[in-house]
Every structure is written in C-alpha cells, then in structure tokens.
Image (tube, helix red, strand yellow):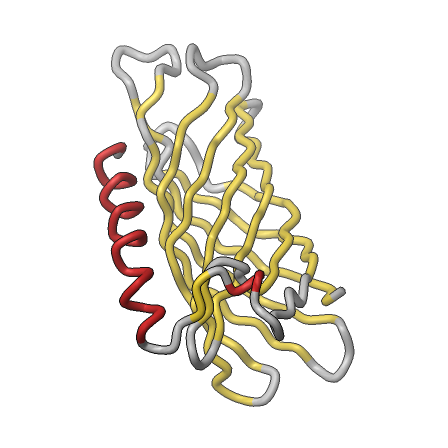
Length: 187
C-alpha cells in the first residue's frame, strides 16, 4: 500500500513539468483567472464492504468540492472533492475522510461526468486495536446543474484499505464499494 502511494506521488511530480508543457496549468490557484467555484453537497447512499462478516448499509455525509487549485487541464477541468461519510453496521462504525480529484467533462449543457483516484483515512469505533486505516480509491461521478445554484449528482467509488486488527484471528482490510446520491449547492 505504501509502495503504491509512493509510486503515485512520484508519477505526479514527474508528470507536472510535462503536463505544463502541453497547456496544463500547474499551481492554477495562484494564476490570474482561476475561480474556485466551491460547492457543498449532502450525500446519502450505500456502502458494501468486501469483508464477508459485514453487510451493505447506509452511508451519509457531506462533501465540499472546488476547482483544483493545483492542476488544471487546457480543456475541461479537475474538480477536487473532500468528503466525510459515516457508516454503521450493527454498532461497528466507520468514518471516512477522503480527498478525490475528478477529471470532469461536460457531455451536455449542465451535465458533467468525471472520474479519478482518491486517498482516504478510515476511523473505526473502539472495537479495533488500531482504529485508523488508510485507503486508495477509484471513483466515477455524474452531476447535473440547472439554471440555479442547486445540483444533483451520483457517485460510485471503490476503496482499497490497509489491514487492521479487529479482534479476529488475523488482520483484515475494510475494502469496500459505495454508491451515493448528492444534493448540492454551488456557493
């Protein structure tokens, strides 16, 4: 897991000069003309852990998103999403804190689709000997914005996690997939 995160970080650092040469804007938030276009969303959905002892259950949370201040492509855009969600399976509680940049493309007026990687940290309830696990994610999203500041969206995300000690005979991961609907307001 650490090796994959290191390789991803290194690839990002090495790709930045090449991306800049092709019209990409590195450190976009410091450039004239950058607009953050922040939005806040309520999320409601279902998370399905891969662990056979856990069951699919409701997740709820909040998400703050904005145009990425670090990197922007010459066309379309990268949207940075920071989310906080809660999951409860018969008393086993998880809180996910995630950051997910999505490359966004407008496919029709007001309709955008996107996808990208993510990093997460999962905080579990007191039943675990090590209550925090790290996660790597892959997600897909779609959003529709009408004429007003409100929008609706949907997202699918798969998360790979490190292993933790939850009192069983061996360590286990909390790998999971989720589907969520979003109702948001563009600030």
